[in-house]
Length: 515
Image (cartoon, rainbow, N blue to C red; front, side, top):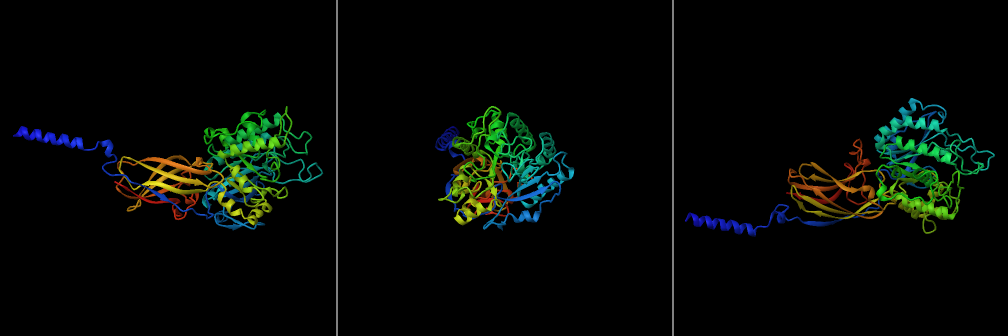
């Protein structure tokens, strides 16, 4: 009898084993994972987002330093009127001229460096970031020269002085990377625009040769190298003309046909990935007042014909997809090109050149036309990135120790993608306890380019994660721990009913059960 029962029991066990699914088939656990499609409504609201939009203008002088005011900067995050403008803007960026007017032949004073550090601290408290440019003069001196409105001596400093000043600035810049959006090259020439210069070659009609020599280019390259070293490695340095980047990367004999940055080269802290642009004469003339010119060298002439314009502009369009682009308008007298469509092409230009920010204050003759022409609201919303979450495929439940699959369909309606690194995070917030579990996503937010982006992620759920119902949220915080928890520095999606102002999180409006 015992033998018969044993045989019977073994047969039942064998049958049960055959009928039961394998572990592979039942994973995760014995729970069937359901996925649903969640859709979201787009918002047309203009709201502040970090490192993009219209910037506010500020300047101070080493001879008479005026500190930034924290309450004034906090106010920039709300809609404010602009002097001589017929529109209002909200801003998360402050452009700051640091005019080194009394140190053109001596070191920067320690008090200036202390005040510079205080400015960064004020920006951090206010929830904004700075775009600094260090210059020696921001004043055009008129006279009887060829150009009339601006004549030599221009007032910038020699290379040795500049290099010493950059070395002095380096510790302060390195210590405040978190609240630096980008740094503009500056130093060379009036306004730091690398053009009207006493020491680095004068390419204007005030000079007899009207081009730059090999020595001029080599001197400029030294300054750029020093700036790339002084500026934190994860921040970009903006130059005024595309040819400046070409001659730096490919040498003083670089052709205007030199290749643009590619995605495989981008975002890796190399020199080619870090050199960006500020065009301070957007749509002011056929070539933006010399922005798209070949300035020649010792063995080649200066050239600015239509072929040069097209070649350099095409280079700029390709290169700018991966770097920070900003600037300002500077003249309304050229043509209606800088007006709204259909008479002008301002929105198409901003999109093609991937603009992230532009001056709210200058030139308001141009920007007032955008308001009158009906495209200002679009420009305000679309400078830089504007992420609209269209839909998401999300699980209803998930089992400990298994992977959770999610898909986010995001359209970037902005002119550009973010240019500084930040890690996208999926947050699971326990509805009973409020505890949050954060998961870093593999997707690089800097590659959420204009247009449609599909983000597909596989997330490992820890075996010891408490069971329960969890809200799903998307967080796009700043990369620096000093401000990562600050909502002002987190990216807000352009959707209704998703933003949590108190936390800086974007709700995915879905709950997942962890079993």
